[in-house]
Length: 322
Image (cartoon, rainbow, N blue to C red):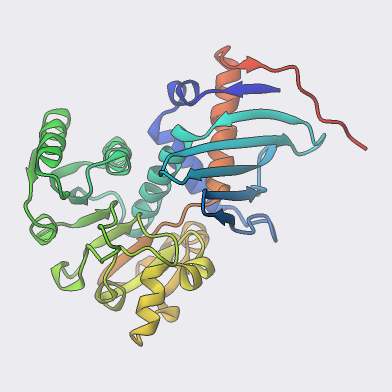
């Protein structure tokens, strides 16, 4: 069994391959029961989240575990098993993979939602998720301009300046989220507010804006105002059932009497038949929940790359089979 560090998996990764991995795994017909969703155990001391998955193709299956401590620290572990033998073949520190799979899935979804056109990008947030999403988008799309808002002026100023230099584009640090969103063709919302209040509102958006919402995945969390859900003509999710029943934004929309089931589609539907978007105008929304399917598929790709590169540490541990 081989242990792989986050630094090792990151060292063999590249964005185009990760984005294509996410597109391909959602294009394939899912295994019945292959991605059953997340199981969360909580206590006063923190939480443990488990996300198992059997991808529709590949050599491995596995589980991603997420531990969150009482003081907010988080760790990730991905365990990968051989499908045929049941052998535990890899243990992977999931920090880099978690950040990459989220941004790669978002980028694959946005590519399917609106094609290869240049984008004027607004980003709400200036942390790791925001950084990874710009990296992923810039790897396969032309970002014409960038506007960023986050609550701390010094942090968003550095963020904007860094990306202006890296991409050679105009990048502005905005004093309000509405200012960042004004005129944007694409919006990435990657930071919930303090107090779980919405940070993006429908009347800020252009008539054909494409939105990715990253930061609200649990019933207690908020990122989008219900007006965004109401204005969206198409809502795509990696797991529509979980989105509708277990995320704060959609629960709030339902409580407000907003009907969204008729415009909610799975990422699999979109990837398997991208032409279904052609007849949908207006605002398009991808709402990301994250899935063990994404973790396991990308972890398999990077694990075998690490082996080819001679990376990893072999551990003398074997499972006992009955």
